[in-house]
Amino acid sequence: MTDSLTADPVEATIDRLMQGAIDLHTHPGPSLMPRAVDHIEVVREAAEAGMRAVLLKDHYYPTMPIAHLINKHFPSGCETIGAIVLNNPVGGLNPSAVDYALKQGARVVWMATAHAQNHIDHDKKDKDFKNKFPTNSKKTVDPIGATLTDERGVVRDEVKLILDLIAENDAAVSGGHHHISELFPFYEEAAKRGVKRRFLNHPTYVNEGSFQDIQQLVRMGVKMEHSLCMFIPSVFQQFDTDHLRQVIEAAGVENTFFGSDLGQKGNPTPVQGFRTFIRLLLDMGYDEDAIRAMVSTNAAELMGISLN
Image (cartoon, rainbow, N blue to C red; front, side):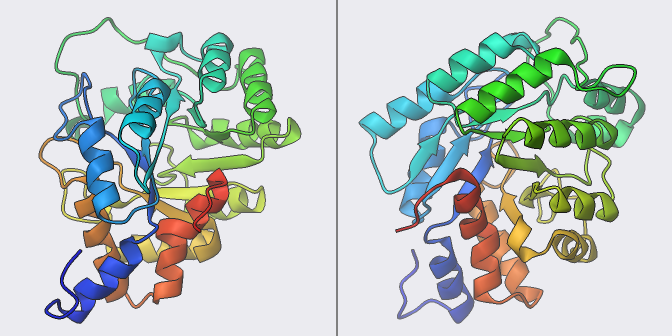
């Protein structure tokens, strides 16, 4: 934290807003994708900045054992959260992997990301997308694409079982990188099966959601998480402040929160990204109450995290 006697007023405001901030989307290493920081470094930096919680996410392995070890051996005011992403290495949309992960402490389940058929299709046809999304440092077997729904648009049975397990454990779920057309029946099914903690990452990115889609999903009880790295200087920057204001307005401040989606080589660290993004929100005219909601309170409510 900066010295309050010498810091400029904006930096002091950013310091205040970092207290209790929550990042539910970090990508530290080790990973097959090149990373600038590891799990311990990310949590340590977040704790030093006064953040309340950090979620560790990897596209290819569950992170709850790492979260458990960090919380046990490096205790701090910053809680480490573990999760699982349902890509090919865990068997894809695999209820058994979800069952074991939840019973070992995972608190968020993502449907497929890099191995969603929608993501694979983007990777093949969109050169800009391919250049921006990190690539593996080693050659792997070709992915098998996953879809949440069958050819009739009906949610698959294995996905229904996964949702039952998530509801039973009161965990949170995200639709991952699946197409918006799959996500509406998916979130309807999630609600029907009692999943209370529902959110979607970067809806206007690979999911191809519109501002109207955001409004409809919010009416269904789905919270919106946006990747702040897409709005600040980083290799992922692609949206301007007009887009940022529109996604916030589409969902409302009360239904919007931001994760860094950072940790990769060539990018700011998650804490650096949060600080830059808070400054951007201040420059755009958002007040401290609105910013605190979008970088702390809303994520805390989604996850059931106490801020006291």
